[in-house]
Amino acid sequence: MDNTGSWARFLGMSLRPWSGHSPISLIFRGTVQCAICILLLVGTVNMGTAMKEIAVLDGAAAGLRGLLMVAGFVLVLLTLAAAVRIVVGILDLGPRRSIPGVVVSISERRFLDFLPDQLNNALWDRGPNVGWSWSERRKVRHELVIDTGSGTHAWTLRDAKKASGIRAGQQVTLVVSPLVGFVDRLESSS
View 1 (tube, rainbow, N blue to C red):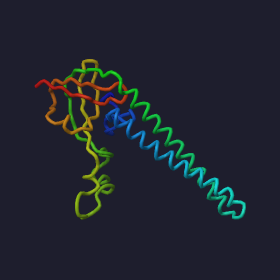
View 2 (cartoon, rainbow, N blue to C red):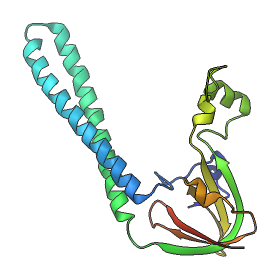
View 3 (cartoon, rainbow, N blue to C red):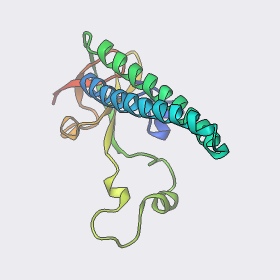
View 4 (spheres, rainbow, N blue to C red):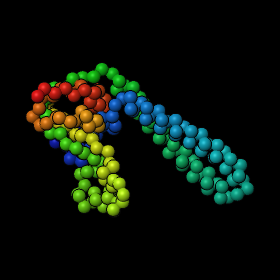
């Protein structure tokens, strides 16, 4: 949930990490990321140990060992980020809150869509390839802005089914998670 007058809304992003993701998704993705990082970290440590023995004979192996130490540090940071994702997902399983309001706007957003069209085309369109361009493959999310009576706020909807049929001026009630603002249910009264 972001204040809609902020630069974050203009940029089409939320200041909340993982905004709009379900808690189960956060837990699952965090667990997979953590497992992969731990597996790579164990391999890196084993390679570093082997490089230590080889470094005695070969000076180039010492440089490779230093590179492995940097890779290990990055893997530790990624593992910690995955653990935080898991914890946030678990904490976000808590009680939902209902937020009634009137829809101000609902818009389709894509990654970096705030950039000028020419720059977006340069970044994402890859010529006359068969199939979809990169631009068309970018995940679509919807930004729902509602007036709650205590201010105007925005939520990210990652499920297109929830966004369908919602129009400006419509009375809605959102049932959202407490931390990342996952919209569990969207109830509308025409």
